[in-house]
Length: 549
Image (cartoon, rainbow, N blue to C red):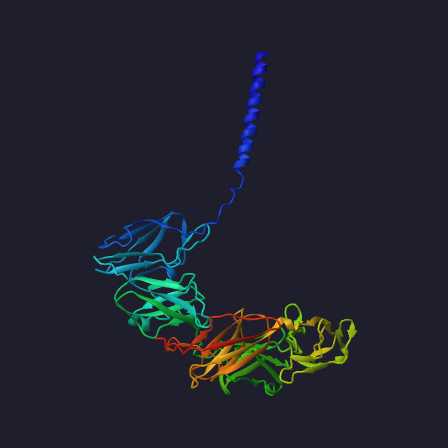
């Protein structure tokens, strides 16, 4: 009897332990509760030999950090100055450390700077340790001069983050610029500031670069570049260097892309905008006479529509100022079929509002051969309206203009029924409807801008810029004048002024190889607010053009 009681007691104990183990094991499987996000990059905790070592003789450097990290893009981001081209050092990771192994001998009495750029980032969050450097000298002295400043965008005046600032000696400037990456560089911080440290006395050319591909080489027309014409004569710490980035126009004009689109049009893309462009079809014969050509607003793309597609190859000459610069040949199947669907766009806002005192402009994706107004329905509220005018733009066969005496607070609907539009290929539109209203006048304002110029012998371009940094109006100015901007949406605007040195009425870019700066732009340091039912007035005095060294 006593044995049975002991057995029962033991079984209860074992059952209790089993339940406890299960509960705790379940608890241990729960996902830990998240804390604040780690925003701190890896931190150096020990360097062997120490940073800033003099009389350096080691063959290896060990840099230990406080957390695990990745060493990314070594070839693009890590540099050593002076460079060791014959046998560059190797960079390896070991747990939380970087081991630098020198394969070549070091120069005597020389300061070396190893710049890790943006290569060091923690494993979990990818926080980057920007511009981390390790410095040592093989002699008793460490170079300590510095160059610092700011990088900004030449068009907007905004400070630029993550731009690369590079130093080159006069010899390097002609030999490696645009071919190899420099060994002395730094990345701008969130305020656009940079600092290049531990520099030796000497002359340096300075460049800024905002890259599309992170290789520290200016090798792409889409990249932004900045420079100073004259070298910096570094004899003491130099600060307040201002670099203004600009997109350089390609020197040689060329065709980037040419193709047949799915709707049959020929599409061309150029590496820059053309001046007085034109297109001529060389083959097949007589095809040139029936082509329709459309260039984009910036004249850097072109579309060619052909009524007759019965050919298997076509040769096209592209001209600027009546001079051919490229000839393109394209082939296709003679009876190749294309997919065409007429689609329409309107000059209304995203919420289907039409700007007061404007006509309704309808733009087709394909040139329109004809339209049948009897198949078009135009309603005001629930009433069908026939007293409107619909005409085709003679200069652009893709555009129709509808004129009508719009009424406030009335709802309109324009319906293109089946077959009401026919494109140049004979395709007919499928039914499409567009609802819209005239916008309220109180959503628009007027600005009178009184402009005073510093020199009536020079030219300027006054630009009205909206809160999306888009130029909405541009006016060439050569004397004191008043500019009036009517019927513009309420909101905040800024004024920028181009110092138009060549008097062509627009901003012109620079050229880094020719050491030509872009035209200067002055930005008025005050926002202008257009309010409803209010005529704003503003007076600006354009300062004298700054002199850039």
